[in-house]
Image (cartoon, rainbow over all chains, first blue to last red; front, side):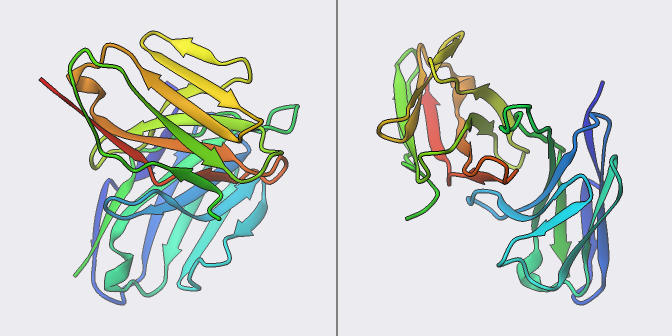
Length: 116
Length: 111
């Protein structure tokens, strides 16, 4: 089945040790998103791509970087994770409609990041 | 004013009851609207898109009121499995490709 796949499901890293989360999609959607979600909060958008056009939210820390080498893959790099970065990281995809609207987002299962 | 606002609840209802809640959005030009449900420690899953004329999917009914800038979700004949957080999602600016989330409305259905 076409889907959005995130790896790994659970990631444990040490304080300050770089970590990379990955996302792949078989939906051929042109928009990909990375969200951070903490307990009892709504998902918070970190970045999104429309094709290769990268959009960084104004309040996304510099510690967070992203790469989208092709349509199917997107990566989230956390250069020096701090304790406050422990969260669920969600990747999602969508497609732009001819009317300019968006199809619903499809989410991956998420990567739960823990910081020691 | 937040882009998307929801009543956080919680709504605590007995099985079989009807529960309804709203979500307001800030930009009158917003085009795409969705309801997602999220279970604890899981990813959000699409419940339904919201169309201008309103739409129904089984026990779930979604409405869009452009004049007052809100969408609503009504759940009839609530089941225990309907217990979840319901997220309102809006494409605030056409051509922006960014979807804004409400903070979620928690619904608990009790036996």
